[in-house]
Length: 258
Image 1 (spheres, helix red, strand yellow):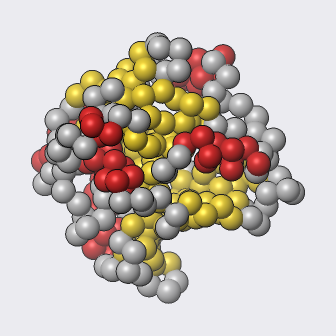
Image 2 (cartoon, rainbow, N blue to C red; image 1 turned 90 degrees about the vertical axis):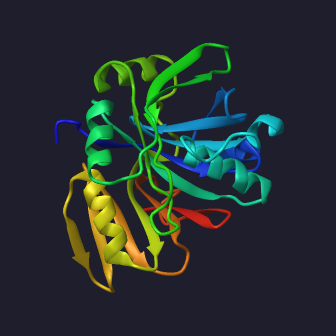
């Protein structure tokens, strides 16, 4: 696929960013404050594992956070409303494309209810503006949040070099951690996996116990039968001896270190 889709990052909704940064630090995993999204009233912290990263997102400006609609901002809307309800959990994943207009048109033609392609932006902790192109998907997959899509300026190699220079991509004390798979618990495994197959351009593979896998580059999206209708687990490889076999619970979700 010429769009070169990749799993860019995972959004996790939290109530207190600083306390979560401390929890990860105790495990030997480094997160740094990323700044704020003024248009949504949100704030975040980022932990990088190569180019793939985790975004801890929370509310900074409550008045702004409660004032925008879900249309064209679905994942962020869901984050602000989880905050309002006191819920912490893995939200959804962001998929990186190298041709956002082609991705947008392909999904639109396939009947996916895509929102508009817009310029995304946030201010980092130094007040510098970070920019990208982004579109969300309106509606849900029978209640399950869709991923959202973004394109960063420049090549992956250039961006990785910049993030290393900025001290954002680092060697974590806990090990050479890499996100390997995400587990969705859904009522209808096959129907849900087929939508993600359409989104990613990858075939659905059956696994034991009524499950399915959709590959996204070298990573796995795993669908299992269950009532949560949400992402329940994020799994990492590369954990050192002090972290291997451990699990970190964040509200309704968990991060497992293999």
